[in-house]
Image 1 (cartoon, rainbow, N blue to C red):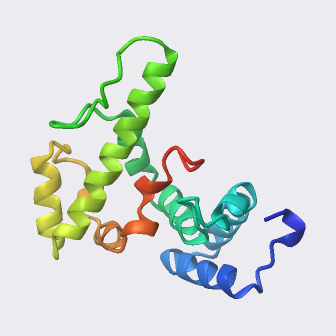
Image 2: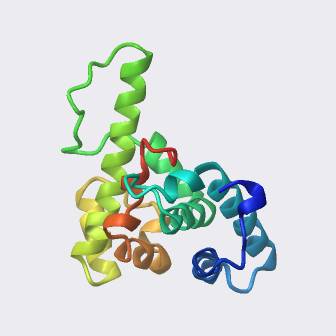
Length: 171
């Protein structure tokens, strides 16, 4: 999608905008920030999102925009937190810049997949929290008790899973 072609009146774009702003209701400044971020990401990856062979979609771009704006502390944990018990190393050697990049990518996928799988497996916030603590997410992590974050990951399936976008421009 070129900037000139990005049309907020396009039904698909409008649907994504309306779904995304629900996460920022009551805060016009955050709604505007979301719209700007979504427009930017849709412009950057819109062509890929319209390619049927790409895992990217406007829905995934919208979810990514919401996630990074609404829960930056979870993004920090995904990127910088200590290695999880049982996390895959993808057989990547631990030396060299490329190996470090691949190891970090594997960590991002592992952590997003953990949040998504726990969201799919548990019907309650308590179940989700217990599963994440068992996977060694630190107990004092404030976002573990965030009902909206839990619901966000409960909705994350297949095409809308954030982990599907890793390595395709979203991370």
